[in-house]
Length: 360
Image 1 (tube, rainbow, N blue to C red):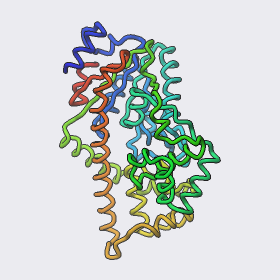
Image 2 (image 1 turned 30 degrees about the vertical axis):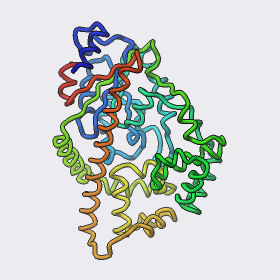
Image 3 (image 1 turned 90 degrees about the vertical axis):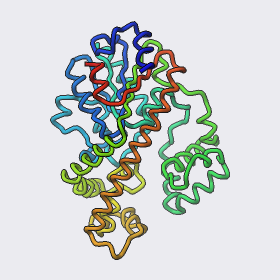
Image 4 (image 1 turned 180 degrees about the vertical axis):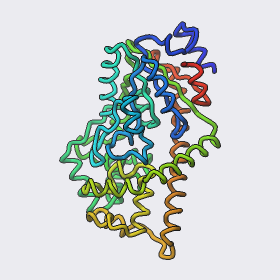
């Protein structure tokens, strides 16, 4: 707990009890999926000192409730979250927009004499807040439409080959299966004439660089076996609560949804979509995009629907555990930031209960 001791000494506080936090604090509660951070956020909200900001790239979507473990409407009414249910699954929401929204919210919350409590597990968002973003410009709609048409006509391999010619450095960091980042890199080059790798090498700016604020990050890395058990139990609840039915309803409500949209690549949702394709569910005929998805999906003819359902659940469990593993890797990389930013401090914990004992 050396980081914690250094933090307390620097802040001249006896402990990290919520009552002792300076008014200009910004608190980040980072933990892997299914670790219990939401329950602690609720308890902290009830102290009256905090407002909650969601740091979750899936909770932003309306209608995606079961598969994202979104707080219930009753919970959201009692414990309001900023940046939950803000866009439709057909819309896009990038990291730069998230950072801009959070900066506005932090100022508003401080003006309300409250402390922003950022809670979630989307590490890309946290890294943008704590380590910064390079000055990569937003993609203009016309450019995005051009690249998406190119993708649909020629496939991701053709876009990747284009990048290998115009931005070989970025290709060294991207797998050919990374459709989202490849299309984004192509968009940036077409729009600016400058490779994405060059943009990413420009000096970063981060909200936590603001010396008028004190950023405190509480990073929780629980025992892996304990976390895996929690993940499996939570997925069981999702199946029982109707995750498959939720995905069917989404495709019916939003006929312009496509397999390449960020919302449809969320863990759990992707596996359900594959199951629906194998099952030849009628909803997969709702548009040419889903017909193509079903046609191109590799299927085992001998698979019964029951086997396909179990395969879906196994894949979702594996994907969620892999997500938690990636989250933990990102969290460990945050430790180096303690030596970089004077107004940002990161303390590590092994359980949510340990954080709760410090704060409450």
